[in-house]
Amino acid sequence: MSQGPPADGTLKWTGGRFAILVTLADGTRPWIRLEPEVTHVEATRRAPELVLRARRTTSAAELLARPPANETVAEWTERWLLFREAKGLESVRDDRSRLKNHILPVIGSTPMREVWSAQLEDVRDRLDQRIRDATLSWKTASHAWATLKMAFHDAQTAKDRSLRVREDDPTVGLAAPDRGMVKAKQYLYPSEYVQLVSCPEVPLVWKRVVTLSIYLYLRAAELEALAWEDVDLVHGTVHIHRSLRRYTHEEKQTKTGGTRRFAFEPTLRPLLEQMHRESGGQGRVLGEGGMPDKFDLANGLRVYLAMAGVDREELFTNDATRKWITFHDLRATGITWMAVRGDEPLRIKQRAGHSCLATTEGYIRAAEEVRAGFGEVFPPVATSVVTP
Image 1 (spheres, rainbow, N blue to C red):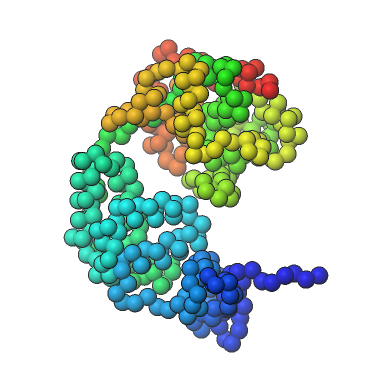
Image 2 (cartoon, rainbow, N blue to C red):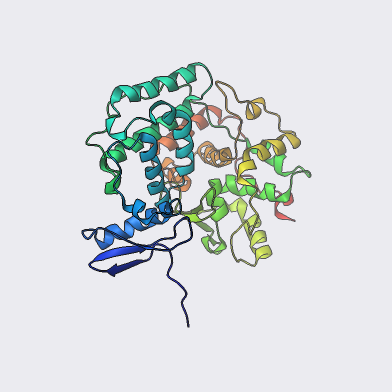
């Protein structure tokens, strides 16, 4: 039986060196021969990047050409982004936008090897000015600065040797852009959650997605990836060990890279059992198309809260000191409920999948301030959520 042509990125040993199969922009599929000293490990690592770069050129020689000594920051960062994309890093799209909007307008035309600290301070000062002018949030500025620091760190120490064009990292010792006030996370009170899921106008899929997000303390990408094989109804546990990429929906590890297994809230069982019956216990818990569009999650949540008559002002206010509720705050709701209930800090940390206890302690401090009169956390899931 024919196995078909080899796939892009395939390696072969020929003429005393490794070669990688790629497809160029004109559709041709040459074998790109690497330098004789390249090992199998390095060739395997370089293959995904070369495959991506090949799609943007019609010249096989260009793929292996050494970067010129006067390669600009803009040219170098494009190679860097391709390297990161080949590694499967989901932040590449955001990194490219931050570079384009905040970094390259200042230093993009400067040779990468010649950038020095004072020029990077100019980038930082421009970010600070935009923060003061209220044309840029301090958090966006912080993300842009982090992207710049990663780039120059890799320009000195990247695993891909072709990216190492500097002997130093000029960002070391530089002060970051100014930080503004950290807005508190929002959460729903139990009564507000009940009000939302009891509203006849709220679609069933939204009632279930909101409930699962709160009761399982899941990030949106983790909830979408959750499969029935991860839910043990016999022993009452759930195993969180994967999530989905934002744009491609491919499976990946969780945000922190860890896995967690814990007993789900007893009041959630009727909903899980009903959804298990409906699906036959196959595939993902939410089923195909069961998750609302990710780019409409925050707006959708606020629309349905308002429709249900939940009108607490701070849930819908976004200003200098307050942040309106987003879909991610449903996870924060579940974690806050655990803290209000008085769960052990390490238990909360493990269930939430926090990488450090300090994050968990922030929820505990917030819970201490509102525990009195908070209401019954993790109430029994309403029939309007369980029954289709």
